[in-house]
Length: 309
Image (tube, rainbow, N blue to C red; front, side):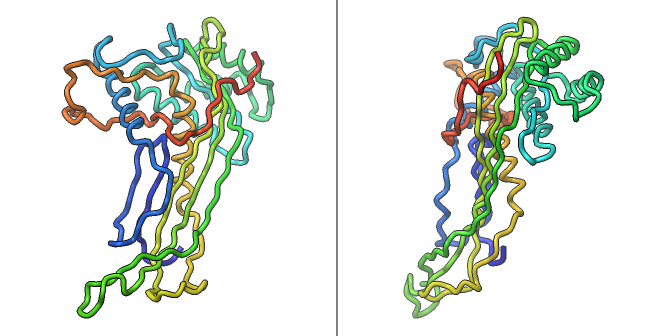
């Protein structure tokens, strides 16, 4: 995508953050979904408090009944999409997020993979969901886990599009030039990725399903470019940059975080500040985050993804 860079804006509700490059004066940002900054900050504080404050002073337990689950193992999700490796990426990010919270201990992915390879000699050996649940439960118990997470990636979609040219009044800086006399034209490329998953947390000791959910995560990156055109008439098509795929990887990363946040929210502790906790700005590690922040995009979540009982 050619043209002079104007801004780069990332929107991923799970990320709870945005990155914005330098913007030319007078060039407005695109109309994008806003990240849920307040939910994200609250979630980040909850993770920090869960990791470093005494019981009863800073957090409340997760909404889901996770009593007795202190060690968690995550298995690669079954992948119903054409995105090879997405299942391992999701499991690794989920474990890293749970570990960062401080509420759970996690079984290393390598240990899970080793046991899976030993018990399932070929990745081409397909097994049904019920058999996989039993296999995962046996492996989890063998590895000392109290709970385990299994599921599947049910959808993946990406789109890259360049919007119609927009303009903003400029000028007024040169002698004899009135404000708004000239125009700055720009276009915005929007790269959007969505990831859909179904997953559950199971108590390895009892076999009970502690939590299950269908979640959809969306990541979006908007890349604004100035056009070399200052007339009031709309710029010719030859000046419109061609779309690029440079932002797909980042949008996918945000979508993965978003989907995982939507799934994991009920099994994470909640913030409950002590009366004398003081302002958030006084905390030395303010802003620490597990990478699993509360979703704000109205991302779809459903309690029952339809796994076998």
